[in-house]
Image (cartoon, rainbow, N blue to C red; front, side, top):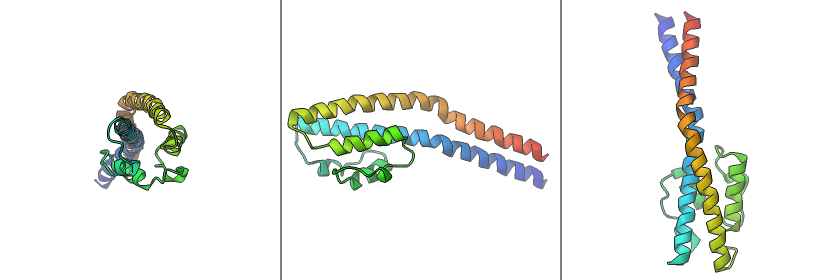
Length: 155
């Protein structure tokens, strides 16, 4: 009886671990999507309101990790350790490059800068969405399968 309970607990644990591993990719998508929303807000602001970046970054971008991150950015260059750990190196480099370049150009150059990064972020979000359709259930399935294998070996 204890082997069955232990097997069920191990299966639940490995399934949860598989979900947490696949969550990394979901967080990447959410972060870059929020960054893309922030960028879009800057583009609209540049065309109409001309508010400061400090005022725009206080808005809610529907992902708490991004909200926390953007509130800590000093816009004199982002330290790599300040980027979330779940971002890949290329994604971190793009985020650092983006925030390092904000507000350093003339009006037309700033608009071009933001439009260029809009294309980059749109592409990155679409690739992550396509990948997450495959990966999200895969982590849970692999975790569950490993748990069942361990459970069978315990019996």
